[in-house]
Image (cartoon, rainbow, N blue to C red; front, side):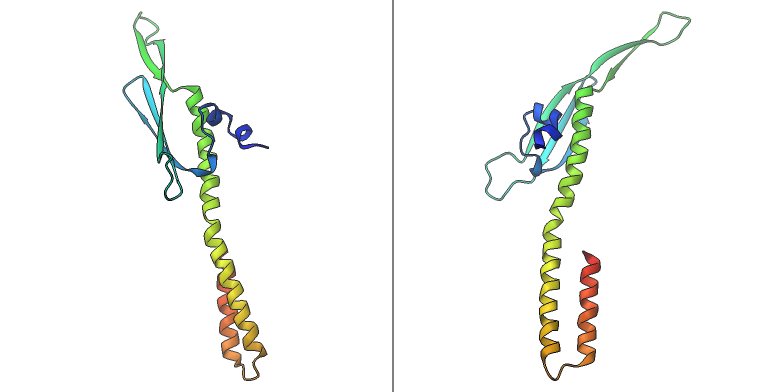
Length: 147
């Protein structure tokens, strides 16, 4: 399944680099406008913008304020399109946050492999001490728990 199919609202907004979205902010600009700012995590030296702003209008809703009088109240409702975009962004930011932790997991896995290699050389050595081996096992257990 393509990413455009996963995030149709964002694709309709012209967003194509879903994996680079870091986070977003949403604020109201006056009574009838919302501003969505999407912040990207760009590679060093990239000429692409760090963030992009999108403006959405709010729809005017008129309701009867009191059943006994003819007084009307006006309120502005957030755009349904914006609500869909925010829902997609919430999922996307959560996914990207977990994907960015892969580098730390990769580093931890490399540490575990290094320690296993050291342990293997300790066991092969004829004068390996039991306390050193036990300490190395404990260190490996801590790293695996961190993964």
